[in-house]
Structure formats: structure tokens, C-alpha cells
Image 1: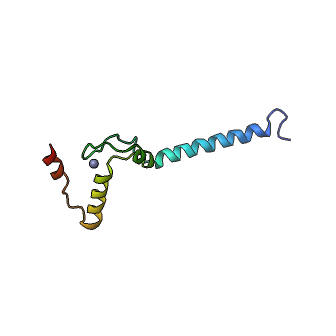
Image 2: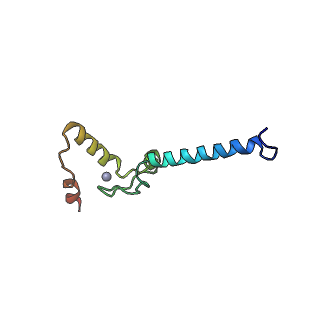
Image 3: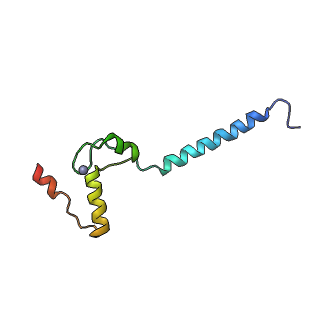
Length: 89
Ligand SMILES: [Zn+2]
């Protein structure tokens, strides 16, 4: 006897809607910050569309990302970046 005027379907639709809402919020929170850059933040090389699609919020081109990862893993974060750029400019 849950009242003749409220369909069961309407109630579960409402629940589903709020779950979807919550999911969307969680996904937005989980995502890396904001939009992908079209050009690398380090060297200003264009970042390939595929890379941007695969890594939402990506900020670096593959070269700079690998260099940064490699430095962090192998050299404990010695800061060498910039030297390459200043020669090119
Ligand atoms: Zn780069």
C-alpha cells in the first residue's frame, strides 16, 4: 500500500538519478586537474591528440614526461630541465 499515485518506477528513477549524480561528482573529483594542455608546459611542443585523450589533464609532452619520470626514479629529482630549452631559444 504505497499510495496509488506514486509509481514504483518513479521512485527508482529518482534513486538512479541521484546515484548517477553522485558518480559524476566522484569522477570529476578523481580526474586530474582540469583540461589537457595542447602544448607542453615545459618545452611548448604540441601534445598529440591521442596522448591528451589518454591522459586527461596532461600537461607535458612525452619527452618531458619521460625525462621527469626518469629523473624522479633514477636520480632523485635532480633539476636539469631548462638547459635544453635555453639552447634552442
Ligand atoms: Zn615537452
